[in-house]
Image 1 (cartoon, rainbow, N blue to C red):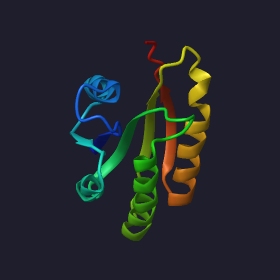
Image 2 (cartoon, one colour):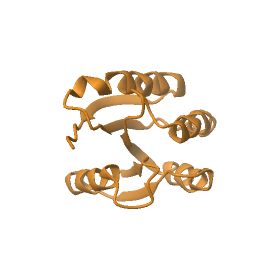
Image 3 (cartoon, rainbow, N blue to C red):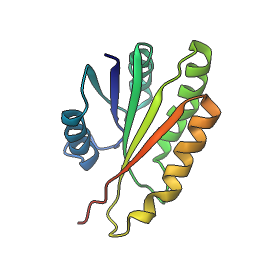
Length: 134
């Protein structure tokens, strides 16, 4: 069974909604899982190494100004090159959370992720959306 890498993309060190949702999603995903945090540039290399033997990656991210957080965007550029250079054909899933009642606020973030996958030769398999009301 293939490994799934789950990435908490919240910039918060602890007690983030993204971290909570990542753990909840992990309960539902069968097989081997690896849970990682993307907050700083130092977090990038371990994530990229974990992707080498994975079949799926789940990004769990907060919505920032209708898109992904800036630290995640710069990682995605690096990941795109890494996947292309290493011939990785991952399935990408996204859980986006926000503080709005309308789930449609996540649509532009999902298009960013869909375009990222198209550029990197990755498969944007399904969209999982979560709306977190405060």
